[in-house]
Length: 66
Image (cartoon, rainbow, N blue to C red; front, side, top):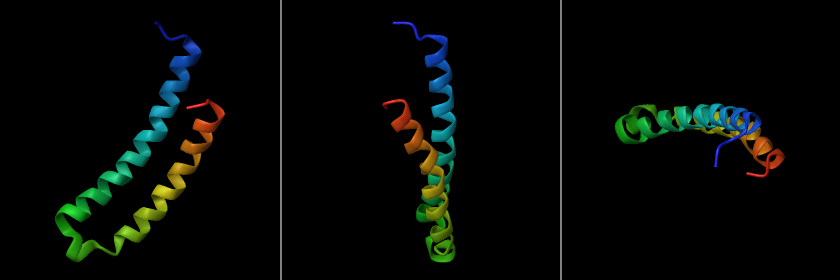
């Protein structure tokens, strides 16, 4: 089934939100895997960034019934 233009736009917008969260999660992963002993303090800041980045994701999902 082909997506409509509106569905494509919605999917693209959602992918942008997901990308931002995934980038932050990647930073967390790198710290945990490679530099936890020296960079653990950054986890607090990055956790807050994830929370902020997830707000529009959750709003978007609720608005579009994801």
